[in-house]
Amino acid sequence: MSLFFRRFAVPVVFVAVLCAVSAVYTYALRPAGQRSLVAATATNLANLRSDPIGALVASAFVSESGPWVWPAFAVVGLFPLVHRFGNLRALLLVGAAHVIGTLVSEGVLAWRISTGAEPASLRLLDDVGPSYVITAALLGTLLYGSASTAGAWRVFAASGWWRLAAAVALGALAPYIFAGLGRLDVAAVGHVVAMVTGAVVGLLLPRPPAQLIATERASPRRGLPDAR
Image (tube, rainbow, N blue to C red; front, side, top):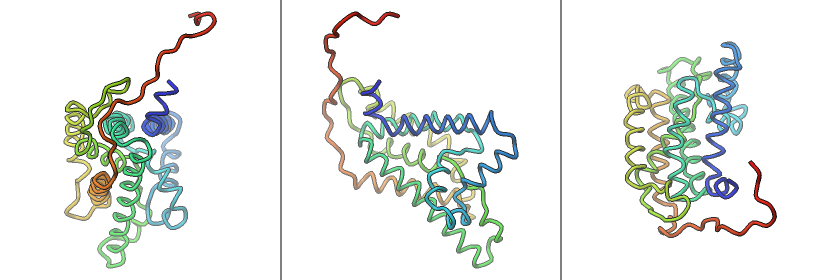
């Protein structure tokens, strides 16, 4: 388990925190508490001005709709991505996608408010969710997950099956994540920018060659075996 966690620290932590926050949001909070959590963590213009780092981090783990769907999509996108790039490079890819997608989409909104095309009340828009991270990871798996390896974690090698799963996931999400793009909807613009950012970062990142991944070798244990 320790070796598994070190190898896939980013997806394990992300999925675990996402599930924990989703459980609290769904089962522990009343509607008023849910609204307060979303308002406090949203990456809207007001929060980005007062607490940009906190909003950018926290918003990636709060989902108003379908909170239990996103962890499944995260597994499909993040584990093969980390298998291909490693934890730090994969984190850079999805982190850049999330941050740039948020800043560009909210910047477009600020411009539209300044021109009178949108009401000033949208400065408090409820803009939360892990979708920028996850859609960028899914596209990264689809585009760059070509390494095939042997060893303990070969199940996460982004072979044809993982790429197919990523394509199916993106196809299922497409009607929702791109809705309103023609109207420059914040979420739609953010998803496009996040996915393009992830694709470009993935293209620029050095990718380790396909090779045998070091696995934990079995070693003789001393003393009595574990009693179960």
